[in-house]
Image (cartoon, rainbow, N blue to C red):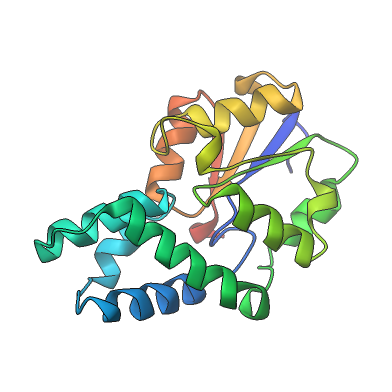
Amino acid sequence: MYERYAGLIFDMDGTILDTEPTHLKAWREVLGRYDLRFDEQAMAALNGSPTWRIAQSIIELNQASLDPHSLAREKTDVVKAILLETVRPLPLIEVVKEWHGRRPMAVGTGSESAIAEALLNHLGLRQYFDAVVAADHVKQHKPAPDTFLLCAELIGVAPEKCVVFEDADFGIEAARLAGMDFVDVRLL
């Protein structure tokens, strides 16, 4: 089905790994410390964004005077403590395994590299990917195309010959802006 593509790029959270429940649990814990509220639907709309951007949105929603980068670090620390115990691969990982060795593949994620690498290694999945591009590797995050363009560069494939697997509107927009085809995994 994906024979026509020279490179395959996968978002991580919600696409190949079921991380969303863990991220929500971590946000609840951290935001509870400050008595901040958040809207799960609004947060879902920010899927694919770096943690600090989500923190900024929560701070604005609550009209709080916190530093988004500090809040994001707190959330990341909680995630690190619980993520390895709770995250499992999603069914799309079978596509990764099927195409391993047949096409260069990369992960393009809005998560920080420490979390992405730890998760992929812990689950024995890092070996399938030629590159992992995370939020701390680019200046402009999804919906900007930078994450996916860097993935294509690192796997040595022209952007127009890549397909991106995504579960978030920001990621789909990033793929489109990168000149790549995409698969909206929410429709699979």
